[in-house]
Length: 137
Image (cartoon, rainbow, N blue to C red; front, side, top):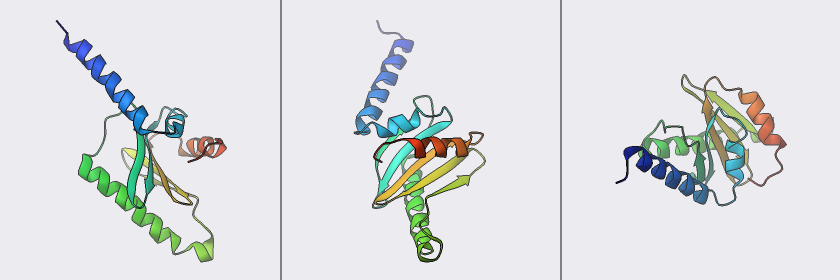
């Protein structure tokens, strides 16, 4: 007979394997592992999330519909930032600090890299760590 704790451990293992499989290059997992305060790392192309990883112990803050809206909003904000590129130069990254979470958006040539992290996390340290990685995003 399988006990409740064994089922939970088995489901956690499956969840971890699915997240790893979804992150085909493994680079997003490397970013997630840079700092314990990072909750989620995702890649947006053409206003849709194409790859992501989430910290195993981190509960999603959104349901699927709200998650899609948040990814779309990040894309819309990125488009608005581009209006000023001619005058101010390209946007490299932005940070939005909310009560429960910080959202970091990196502007890439062909999309966005998005992160969420605990609100008390050091976003400057995380940004510097990501910039120092020698990986293809």
